[in-house]
Length: 112
Length: 117
Image (cartoon, each protein chain N blue to C red):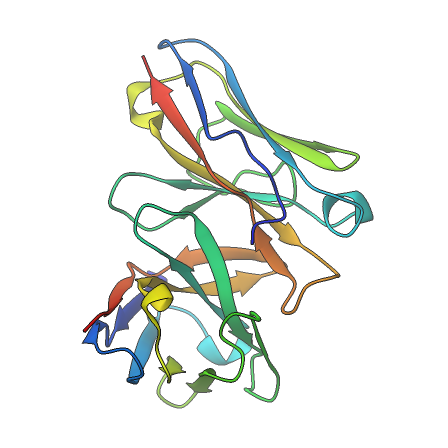
């Protein structure tokens, strides 16, 4: 059902930089709709990480950054830390779907 | 503190019904659109339904349309999801979330719905 595609998993050593892609289409990201990112730690509810493509809510470390270009968006984590091990989801709006809100397939980040 | 607390989950037989509630506090509930999002065990997030601030407009995912009904009571600061004709594939943790210009923040802690005989 997800129309936003993410890699199932990414991994990196502490201190490294990892990126997560979120690939959409002309009816969602490519149409200019904003992308938002959520972090879901094990056993907890999702938490807003990035909103409006590249904005961080207060309290989110500046190690997390977002960008968008064309039909894709990316989340970057620099200076990877053990507590960043979690599932990450992108989310946007899709004009072709009932209700229109769509999530990405999700990416598991593993800190080696 | 802005907070959302879901309740009402549990075990229900296929074909049965359940009503979820989401109690809001710490913000002006009547000013915000609200959503339900679900997550099947070990799976990703799936948007389920939304309601506008005064309850006059609703929308549903195709998978629940005609079976689920979203509603709200602004006097009680509470969001609801009435789920009928439940199927095994409706088994999931159900989260309520506040909407702000397209993103969801905050989320409730979730309530587990298990559909099984």
